[in-house]
Length: 191
Image 1 (tube, one colour):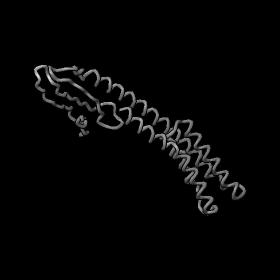
Image 2 (cartoon, one colour; image 1 turned 90 degrees about the vertical axis):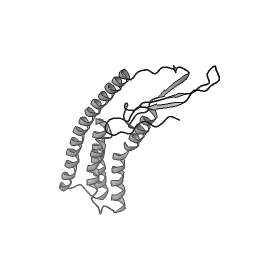
Image 3 (cartoon, one colour; image 1 turned 90 degrees about the horizontal axis):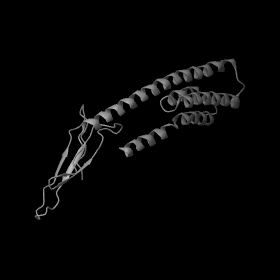
């Protein structure tokens, strides 16, 4: 379970660079076309891409960086004009909207985390502890989640045969709990 959460966290870490990449793309496109293409829509998109990926401070910083980048692009090409006020105001307004979305998403994530913790605690309380031995059999168990981001939903166990004192070998059996609710796939067979 820890491995799966670490891969999801690595993916999330890579996506955190997306807002900076959007601003960088705006610079590259503006430079490559010598200002022939209006890149303010790209700059305006940067705070929106930051909202689900970064903290509130990161989202606001992305909006500020988009405004600074837009101003730098204008100053490199020409003197600022009155018409430039609309794109900058748009980026400020979109940054405010992105900040509100960021706060709402953070609240939802906290609620989801709490729900998962409660569900995992209930599952641990309900599932019985397996004995180490059942007669001549040794019992081993392993927990696998039914979904990559879930903390609950899959259980599997296996008992292996060991030679008994009389020299006969006991059978090997494997059991697994059925898949999680709503058609989630069950845990894989143990090796």
